[in-house]
Amino acid sequence: MEVENNIWKGTPSQWMNFMFYICCVILIVVFGLGLILALWKFLDTKYNKVTITDQRIIEKRGILSISTNQLELYRVKDIRLEQPLILRIFGLSNIILTTSDSTDPLYILKGIEEGNKLTEKIRIAVDRRRDVKGVKELDFH
Image: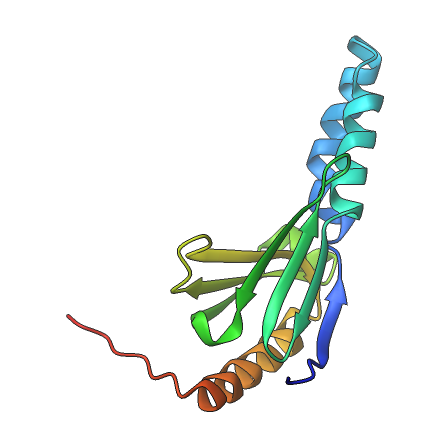
């Protein structure tokens, strides 16, 4: 059995929720409900744990119930880095993976610090994993 080596482990940044938190402040003043919503969103982001190994991406998320999703790296077909203005201000980016996985054809890692470095690490790991598995991508047009 192969040993998996971690490439990255973390959670999305809470800055991803900035506008939601601003809306919650308004709801606190108006309805008193905003604090509960803000706490729920904070915990939802905090308990969204992502581990990227040299073989797969493992995402565990949930506050009361936990759901685990795994994406095999050899299924990644394309990697795109997006840095919208609001994320760039905080040094964050989104990494979008186009995959051949039926569950997650478009897998998005949101609010990632140093996304350009992680994108390159993922690209290298995908290439290596495809070589190990003997997987070749064929495009039919």
